[in-house]
Length: 219
Image (cartoon, rainbow, N blue to C red; front, side, top):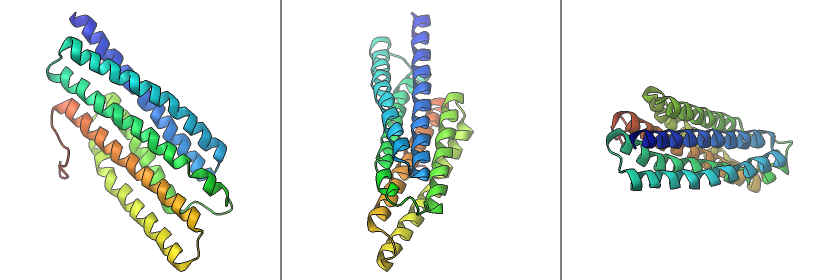
C-alpha cells in the first residue's frame, strides 16, 4: 500500500510538472505574439490553453482522490494540499496569458507603432519569474522560490510605469485610446501572472520547509 501511494504521489508530481511546462509555453507564446503584434501567434497561444484546462481538472481529481483514499500526513499532506493550490494558480496564469492575447488584434491594427519598452521589460521579467518558478518547483529549490518572491516588486513597478505612461498619452491626446487601453490590459494580466508566480513560490517554500510565508514581506 505504501509503495502504491508513493507511486501515485510521483504521478501527481509528474503531472503538475508537465502542466507547468505547458503553462510556461502558453505564456511564452503570448509574449511573442504581443511583441510581434501577430494575431495568428496569439490564436496559437489561446488554443494551447485548452491542454492546460484539461490537465488542471485531472490534477485536481487525482489530488482529491489521494487525500480521500490514503489520508496522508506530514510532508505528503503538505505536498498534496499545496498541489491543489499550485494547480489553480497555474490555470489562472494561462488564463491571464489568454486575456492578454485577446488584446493583440487591437495592437495589430497599428503594427507600425512599437510596443513600449517598459512593457517589453515587464513581460520579459514575468517570463523569467515563471521559468524560475517552474524550476524551483521541479528542484524543490527554496532559494530560487525566494528569488521569485523578490521579483514581484520590479514587476509591480513596471506596471505602474506603463499605466502612467498610457494615461499621460491619453491626457495629451497624442495616443490612440483603444491601443493604450489594450496595452494597459496586457500589462495588468502580466502583473497578475507575476502575482500567481509569487503564490506558487510561497507554496514551494511551504512544501519544502513547512514554513508559511504568505504576507511575510521580510521572509
